[in-house]
Image (cartoon, rainbow, N blue to C red):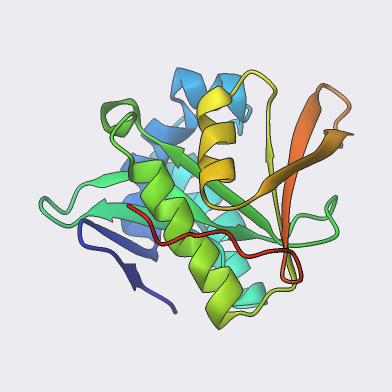
Length: 179
């Protein structure tokens, strides 16, 4: 299982010991507003969510969402990773942070690290990401790491439209190693 490092972050696999973190993240008002309600209401639900949605992705695909750990403290700030969604034709890059860690460049740093892993190690020919039209912070992160807005697509549950961002191996390579 991969573990990715930057000077201040470690992206590491999540497991049952991270249930309290997952419970907090999945019930954060911004998660609910921007991503959606996963019906996780207690630690047992969170542990089950980790097993059924995160660990199963590691087992099935060799990748998934990873905890964003702050090296200086060991605290989990959020998650970032790659996921194969049934309703998208290619792998999707996603991330989310707890409120205390937003606005510090952590999402950008984690997303850039995961993007480099997808591009350079997995050698994915195409990478996708989705966000809501009013999530300007996420749009800035995606553009910063070299993804481009492609088009609006309906979420499979029909409740909303999403902005689809993409990157393709054959497009011009942006400078992605800036701080």
